[in-house]
Length: 328
Image (cartoon, rainbow, N blue to C red; front, side, top):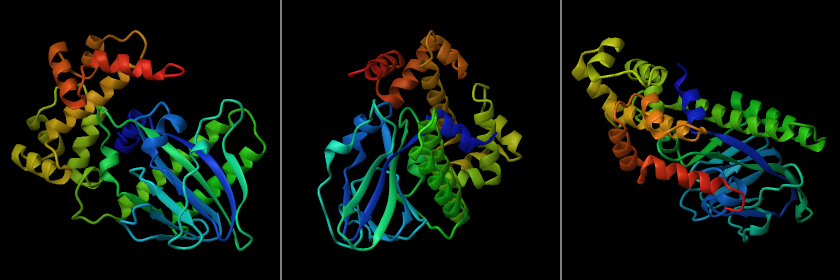
C-alpha cells in the first residue's frame, strides 16, 4: 500500500494554476491569506495551500508578517506556503503592496490561468506562475501538520527541474486551450506538490518525528501500510505488532514516539476520514459508511465522528451538501 498516495486521494487534493505573471522590476505582488479567498478560488475545500514557481528571473518571497527571513527564488525555483499565510513576492526585499481582492475568483466563462503582462516598471524581466491546492482538513488530514510552513524547492534539485518543465508544459497548454486543459493544469500542480513532499522526506533525519517520518520507519511504516490497506479489519495492538515483527509494548512505544499519537488513535482518525468520503456518495447511509470502515455500532461511530469533527456525521453531510450548492 502506498500510504502517501492513499492519503492524498482521501483528502481530495486538487490543484489549479491561477495566474501567469509577466513582470518587470521594480514589482511587488502581495497575496492575502488563503482563508480569506478560499470560498472564491477553491470553494469546495476547507484548506487552501498557495504556491509560486519562478519561470524566469529572480525575486524574494516572504511572509507578510516577516516572521521568517525572505527566500530568494531563482529561475526554476518554487515556494509553497503550506498554511496559506499572507505573503509577498517582490523584485526587491522589503517592498510591500495591497492585495487586489478583485482578481481572486473562479471564472465560469474562460479557462485558467489569468495572464498579467507588464506588471511593475521597466527593469529586468521576471515571469512566475501562482496557484492553489485545495484539500480537506477534517475529519483527518495528517499531511498538513507534517509539513513545514514554507517549502522552498530549488531548481538544482531533480524535482525542481521537473516542476519547471511541467509548468512550462502547462503554460503552453493554456496558451492554446483545448478540451481538458484545466484538468491537465490541475494534475500538474498536484504532481508538483507530491514531488515537493518526496523531496522533503529525503531531507529528514533519522531523529525526525511525525507522520512523514513514520512512512520511512521500518516498523511504523509497515503498520501504516496495513492500516491503510485494510482499514476495516479488526486491528489491535497485538495483531499489528505481530504483523510487523515486534512485541506489543515495543510497537506501541515506537509508533507513539515517531507519530506523536497512539496507533489505535491514528487508525480511528483515518477510519473517520474514509467514512467522511463515503458519506459524500449519493445513497450511502450513516450506518453503511460506519460499516465500511469497521464500526459495528452506528452509535459508536456517531460519537467518534462528533468527537473529532464537532458535529454528528449526518449534520456534517448536510452542511457539506448545502455548501456545495451554487450560490452557497
